[in-house]
Image 1 (cartoon, rainbow, N blue to C red):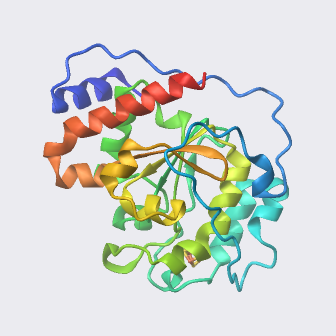
Image 2: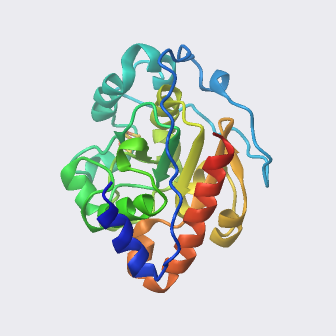
Length: 257
Ligand code: SF4
């Protein structure tokens, strides 16, 4: 990511302080074999503000013969995407234009999860595009992270009509794809973007304020929660709050390297 992006974002939020870069280290050339069950790739859990129950993984995937988490190693992300494109497990398949499966570094240490694709993403078939994507890339650049360093995806892969929040049963139906993606990427940190996806995947009623202040775990992977970039576009007065979130994320990432 160019320095221009970083400077543009810092200028927008009025920050003059030089930012030390977080440099994603190369993953080891020989990665551990991807386990066949999500529960077996759990990594040490950092101190958590609350314990989170393991989400239910069963879902009725009419077009998916085998739960995707059991085939992650064999399929790879490309194979999983093909299965997701054929999925009709929830009604969101009716309202989408394109599946928005996920994008980024398939071996990223840092993985972002937002709730659901928006209009631009639905049309492009790719997460974090358009105005939101530009802001998101600037946010990452402000703490020295390139989009190419991370993997990004949504809790549900198909866009809900009129950008409504996904329902709990829709998150549950799509969760096997999400956990299969996690099994493949094996991130060291998950960053959830916004209250809706965090409440659903972490099985909590905590407010966004509480979520932003806490540290959680999902499938044994440490989780931080920050504002969704699209929220910041609608509420620009919160950019400084977003900067605090980014510093918290940067600081946390430094603890794992
Ligand atoms: Fe299938 Fe997920 Fe799309 Fe629902 S949102 S149809 S579970 S891929």
